[in-house]
Length: 635
Ligand code: ADP
Image 1 (cartoon, protein in one colour):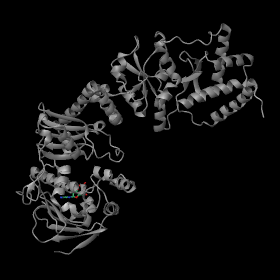
Image 2: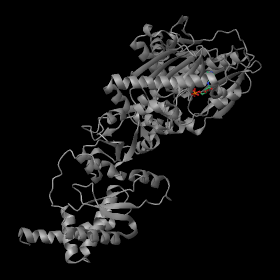
Image 3: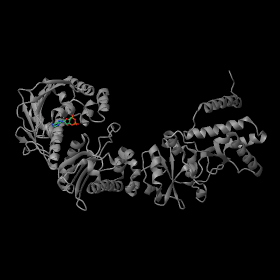
Image 4: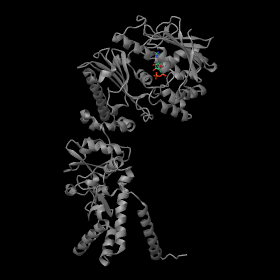
């Protein structure tokens, strides 16, 4: 052996190792999955080089993985004939963590308490997971590059590793010798190894030999006819592919022959990934060409809004030596990708039609990501049929409606689809803007998610119906629609004289509010509320303005029109006060209060202190009157 050199692991590796070495997990068997998956990747890489015509050391060696065990020595070895590693590669690959998101991952597992098994099982923790079961690991590896010497690596996973060149002749590929911890001796027993490999690695596309026996299925299940595969096999493959422990929600298995041949086996997970925030990179479909893996997690086969889909695409029509860098420019690839997208959208459309409860489940889990498809113009027509909202026609917040359902319920003469934004159903139903819609029996879509507003803005119209926010409708368009319930008339219409007083009261209110409003006018829409703020027709809805304000501080607040309802007790009383003394301070108190309360309701009141103080002062006065009127004896 040549001189041996010692190296320390990088800090983040040490942290990960520390967690893996010193804890006990029931799911530690997954280290076998991780090592087999590394071997499989190494074999894929080798085949890729072969297809490119690269010169390869021992090119006639069969591509395979071998697992051997020695119960007496407590030794497990995993050997592949893959691409191998040079000395430099060993140092960079095994010793640092290059994967994006790993820092977050290490942080997450170091902070999580009972849930570790689940997290570790779900993610590829990679090579280091071997130290959950090993007290020492030796790697012997020979690169496929002809002149590179074989390399020997050894570590106990505690802080450093040593490395040297091997003078003995080695076959191409990598052998991992795992000296098992005392309590991990089950991993050198045949039955255990067999069950672990069958459970986690059954669909590896290279043969896996346990001793002399080949134990994995080695079939490209996605190329088999649909009729030959049962639900359990699909589920097993899905679990293998996704590391999910649940069955999939749906399986989409397609064989397309023209114009371009490909097979796709796709899955919709039952649960949306909770780890989405740091796991953004971990999506994509595996791309195969004639059963040869070209790329793991290809991100261009499906648009991002369908990134919750897991699966495999395999085509006869792409060249085997295609480079990953130029895939996107390949016309065949582009056609496959649009066809795959199409297949998913058609499947969802069918599901929506035939299984509305199932679709509801789908929407609850994946709707938040799916919605982002508003920017996919090439599939606009399909997308628009698949989006769902809650609406005033629903019985509760769980129910959903499609746009098609909405327009089958429109009133005669209704040309628009109405919507309102709010945090929840109760809040929206208390919103004064809703009153006229309830009165006319018009359905309103309820938008609870800020993204919904972008969705509506970007799709602009559905069939011939434009979207219209309830706070900037043109009331003239509703004029001819009949009320569904007779307005309860608590007050006679204002007499000619009072009408005049009311108009000058409105002018006074405008004076009080000054530049803060565009105008103060009589409301034609309100029933139970005294006042509300509305946008000018064609202005931005208030929630859109809110979003803009959040994203760009410079956007000036659009001035609104303040509507006052003369058939409301408070306003009637104020008309009387105004008649007796046009300058009574109570008028400005009430005006400011109504205005600020309206701002508060649309979440655009900057500072609530003045409003809170005013309410409290008013209540203080009211308490005096209350005590007096009720004849309560003060103590
Ligand atoms: P990951 O496989 O997710 O990249 P790992 O920690 O499991 O992370 O492995 C790190 C790197 O070490 C791999 O990306 C690969 O380059 C190299 N490697 C691991 N196992 C093998 C192997 N059997 N043959 C060749 N290279 C390997």
